[in-house]
Length: 279
Image 1 (cartoon, rainbow, N blue to C red):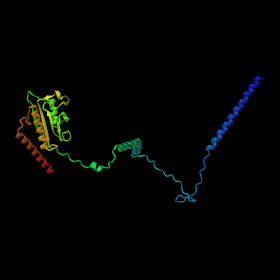
Image 2: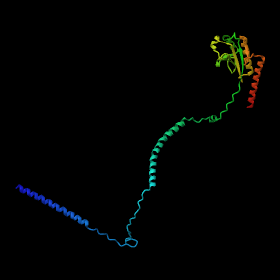
Image 3: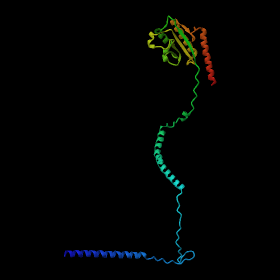
Image 4: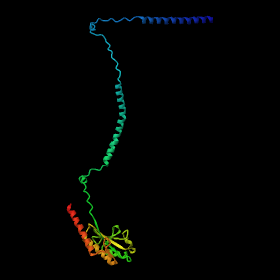
């Protein structure tokens, strides 16, 4: 019984398989027949000599256009333009970034510059040419002590003060226009021994073999009167300390020497007046 059922099942399965194969073959043949049928051309309407049909419709024409290949010059130009655009982009950004900095620098420079002065005309006025230095002459008298008898500082100081000389600039004594020590300097007195100065706080320990009195031309005061005062001071000190009065060349001062000095002063004054009149 079991064997019978097994055989029956195999037969049923075989029949189903055979029926499926026949169905697949029929469908394939039907498709081949439908593909092999020729397509009937559409009826064409009669056209006139110009190619138009009864409805006035012309033939469809396909106009062939030649494919234009891009020329090398155009490609180079396009590439160059693209590169220029790429290069210009960062430059434009750099310029845009630099413009605010330049504006700030310009503003800072403008702030640093001085404001225009209301007195610009005075500032722009041409400066006067410096005047030529006036020629100067120096008149010198020496008070020379004896070798064995130098001038004592303790005795010298009160004598100088009595003659109107005051200790001042360059550590020497000066005779001003006023005996109180005010006004322009008329003549000065220095030590003949180098460095030519005095230590006014140590005059008691000071001694020297000579003193030098000098005045310059032009003089702030009356040159003749200033020379007379200087000569008088030299003679007073010579009498006080037993000294000799000498000229600039260390020669003994005589009446002729005094006249020579006075003539020198007059000649200098004359030249000065001529120079002033010439301008």
